[in-house]
Image (cartoon, rainbow, N blue to C red):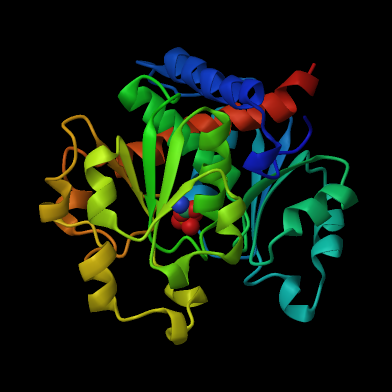
Length: 305
Ligand code: CP
């Protein structure tokens, strides 16, 4: 494949190849003082970010650098986008300067697909609107597999603002492809209309789902995309759908708690849960670098020599 645009495009073999490659990269770099491989020397990766990011942008930068690629970080803020330059012209400009891959985050769902039609190099979706965030789902799957030793048959509860969450969509498709059993848990107003067509169970009752879950994936309440008419109140939301210490006690002994970040501590997740031994939140960030190295390697590495 030339691009990574959505989890829904990945079959089980594709997804497993990414996870296995990330594991090999982790193994190859373990214990090394200089965590660098020469694989993408002479290649250029552009991070093209129209929306803010901490984890995704930095980990793609680190991933590309650890593969010895040159990296350009482009942020729409402070660029000629403010003068009205389009996504297409921006991308063609970057390609004319020699980019081999564009990692794009954009507020519009479908923007990476458009980009893939305009450029000759690879396009990686780093989050588009409410549509998908495939590398987040891959790093989440990698984290589950490392912690629990498997993905097939693992029961995953995805909890919270599913309506606005590209992380939820990418995880639903990828986890289903990899054989996990997914339940989405949310108030009815924070579920998308089409949820009935997804390969998931739907629940409005977090307390009923927790004792049966191997993985609880909490989602950020996306205040910036929220309309007051379908969000009750922070207090009411937290009371019904927040994961606090009392609720965490209902989980099975081996169950883990995930969150893609950034977190609203005290809203969807209590600090005592986020900082607990069950939490994989920091581990997810570290795994993100290995998984993004695997993605860049698989998309670009095969064409290097
Ligand atoms: N999880 C995630 O996408 O975080 P950022 O928005 O900080 O990249």
